[in-house]
Length: 184
Image (spheres, helix red, strand yellow):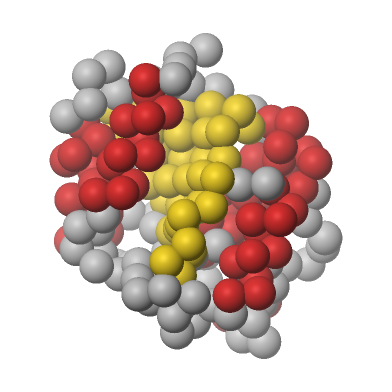
């Protein structure tokens, strides 16, 4: 199956995501790639980002399937990984991914961290796994980002100056999607 669709799953608390971080900018740039369309929608339960709400939304509303790259940022990266444990997708691009609730009650309530990660299932269900992480992320310890890289054997793009990737443009992300399209 070729790559036909990109879906951006934001971090929690993003509000109107068209105008948050790099999300709207990336949607425009991905839509310029021939034969690829990008979906970006406000998520239900945007603050707690409950797995029980987000994963069905990703399947039914965002239509994440074997022709889709899921671009997940922060909580969206966590959602992408849990989704890929039980669904086949073309690729996942993880931006600011992590593996625990970080001692945060809201993260604990999301439900993503109540069981071990099933790395092998994710690798079986996903053709390509790309990860962007930064050692100066103020919210995520590098050790957790590295744990994702090790567990999934990701193509890791490691930075030391991007924080939590909350900038308004993200050209390296577009390059990664273009490369996936070329190789599909």
